[in-house]
Length: 405
Length: 164
Image (cartoon, rainbow over the protein chains, first blue to last red):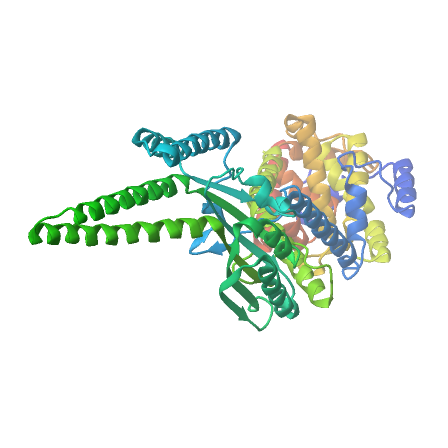
């Protein structure tokens, strides 16, 4: 046999070429004519039809499902955030007052605290009555020690939900002859154009209660800058009705009521005053019995000193009585975004274009935040998935090449 | 790739593709299945074909190569690649004693080639691809494809000379 030349070799190789069976060729032609329906490719996944549909779309029309999915995602995220926020139990309000926030105030006393303070008050009261009758030192000591043990100050804080009625009478301990100092703090929310009217109603309520305005300030301007503040002094006997009237002026956004039992210092001052009276009477009697000029000067000097002391005690007692008879009330009228008050989720009910824009901006901000968080969470997974995909692709290629040795 | 262009590609490549796949698998039914699978995948992916990255035939044969190698891998038939490749379906009817003798010698020589060399022979002489298309299918440069092909033919000739 002759050696192959190139042409012969190549021709012989071509003659060795496998050819398909006519039946297979005809079957494949039929499948080609039908657009290669699925069947031969057993490795095709269940998502292949979706992939085919996606790849068959015009690139510009692909935006439609993309935007649809994005819109649905944003709506779902917004709804989820809204549900989570509504489940949080309402908006929180925090008002600055005298450099402190209301959250720094003494919390509302518990029932046991209240019972303890009332017991102390009862002890002080009995001691006071005994002191008034006989001036016994033991009774005075009992009153002071009992009050000191219980803590003379009693503060009560009202939440916005609990401030609709005249809360002072119901929350404060029964007066029953005791000297109770009261103070209240109210934040009213209103529209910027209604601040002046609300301020006038505050004056009217104070006048009706027989109180007076210690200081006031009314600012006008845009929402948030407009507002007013009042420092009021109202007779304690009418404080409840006055506070109810003030609460009815506008929406109460915050209210804080505090009471302070000043019976013990009052009793102490009264006792001291009685002692001073007795001392003065004694000195006057002693002055009438002096025999020498030197003794007279000495008694007069002691008498002047005792009278100064008496005046001082009297002034203290008057101040204590003033504190018990007049309640301090601080009123602030705020508009949205003002005075450190977080605006509530619902204002006065008037919903306009500005509110709509504000709400839309809020929704978009939340949605953007949710999307950003979602991307931050998904990015590592996407990166890991990409690396796994690339590694698998590399592995499959190597295995394929290894198949050929 | 348009529907019509794919149809032209199919008609121009059907037998060539089968010949290449059959030379890889040495199994008629498996070759038919893989050929049909390759056309089906190519049809589904036809819109993703990028003409700037190569010829349509090279793209089609690349798909078929992956399908055939996956089939081989799945069946664990790597060992069979080194086995007798003489059972080439549909080989031309022999026409004379000398020609028959030469073809038998050629078949025997092919069995001595490594699988990669036999694949190059199949792509070149069974499927009729040019060097550029072979390079694209195998993912190598055209010059590298030419060099490898030349070596494969040389090895085939040496094996043929040894068998004569």
